[in-house]
Image (cartoon, rainbow, N blue to C red; front, side, top):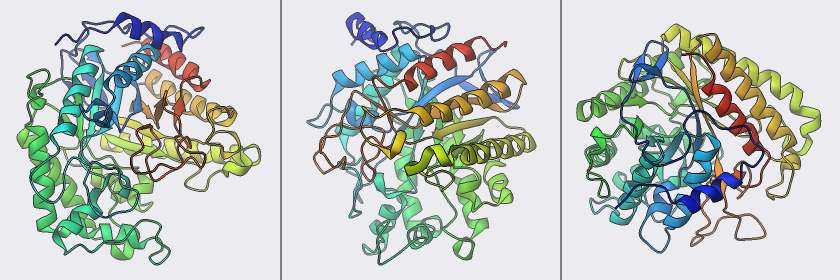
Length: 447
């Protein structure tokens, strides 16, 4: 099949950007398949002889949309990619895993269950998504499991090997940090690790059914990621730090043994995912098989702001965001590695989930992230890119309560356990203009 971009679809995506600054030097036209693997060079990422800097998005559901199945929508996936590429977004962080099991709020279908009969339609959806991204010159970060429940993740792996025992996240009978502490058993379970490594081997050595290219040979993939937001435990009392950091290094080396061409990253939140301990964050990112530091920033989730009173709490949160970025830049310099702010999210005004609600404070937050990123790039600092959370695009909540229900097909960046519209960016949002202008600004940073 051809990988050129449909002109009508591209023009429709470009219409979203009417009045925006041109989004960088690489227009979203066909024929821009990535030619060089991304590699680490000190605190830089490189594509061939050029520094690789990027504006990215989180689109966890790309494989689901790409599936040739009743739950897929390949036409929508193409439209969303066209829109993102027209914005200057060139990097997508997506789920390359999903474990089916008993957890409430986990997405179904998944890529796998306890057996080896993996979901061929979802694997084909991932193939299709990567092929369409390649046609647009986009790169992928592929997450190989999840600490959290919304895609099954580590807790579901444990159910496969422990007789079906589990804790649901936010179960009143098992309040925080019970879920995270039980998850830590994943790192010690040889049986769970064997299943996890079987999945890694399947994906990393897979041949794309659309392009005929081995994943390990495809420069469209920027990085394999151990998990979405792995934590050593929920509290220090349950954290076996040598075990956790051994899991990080051992898994990263295993991936590199299968595929020496691609970067490997942790998917960590940074200090928040390291029990607020700099030594843990450093230990998790120090192994040579881990190529860059990942950072996530969630002011509302972490209590730095209150979505019900953004006018009264924004400034205090802004100061904490600035400090969090600065602390991680210092860690990245200590490691001598690049840094990616690969998740950052903020609510709409009043905490609304309605796409019609303004994004006054969200836009201010994005401007802060963008300014810090550009400053680091201008000063040859460690920040090389960002992935905002997340792209909702043309999707709209199917229900008046903004809750995802089994069988819903309006996939968006807000995962199924969260209100649909809470953090994601919709077509029509003013935030799109900020992203496009930021992409253009990055394109002007000297090499």
